[in-house]
Length: 332
Image (spheres, rainbow, N blue to C red):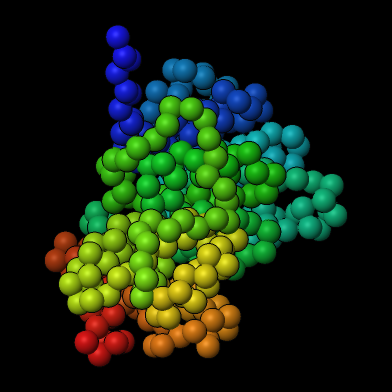
């Protein structure tokens, strides 16, 4: 009798994060998790849930409410031989420990001539859409990507969430894994086995021939929706998930633009000074002769994230805003 074909396994984004962290704790005896509410509560978002019972209190530590101390713990532990996974509950709280990030985490390996390695993985949650207001909803990845010495990845799917957590924790450099609140319930195919998603490699999630949309984090899903709508206007849009903004897979983006001759970059962060400006600059520097239209950008307005659900919905970039910007750029 022929054996039934096994169906692909589908799990949520939050469950994929848990699997990635569990794989690293099993693989690395000197790895541990530290942060606010990561042990007893399993984090406020639930992605360490069950790990305390599995690995014990010597591997998961609830810390005082001090991001400065948490990041300092990560730096010191890594410099002395451990491989910490540090949790910064909300990305907004990075502001509390930017000295440790900017002047210690990002610089120590360089300043000590490679004698000290800093294999610190930082998990943090970004993004709006949950009515958490101006101090708990920001996307500050451009701050981090501007720092030589750190890597920054932003998974959009459950598959990438697991694979990038594992890749980050195996890297001998500091890596920020910037997660997204509204993505926690997204489901997708995720293998049970341990695997890496390479840091610095983008992914073409929808192939197209005459327009390139470069998307960051959850905006990948909005970009795919927009591409489906743009098909009705005669545009066959290719959607690229950057996955990693530092290092950035410029080569894949340029290859796509050389094929399509048009490009738009979309991220949830404030448009002014966002990573989209850097990507747009690289496109015009390296593919200018291939462009048939200006490089367009979509991002949030230059404003704090509103608390009001109605205002926040207006504030957030989405598929409709991507389509509107494409139409404006191409005058269609």
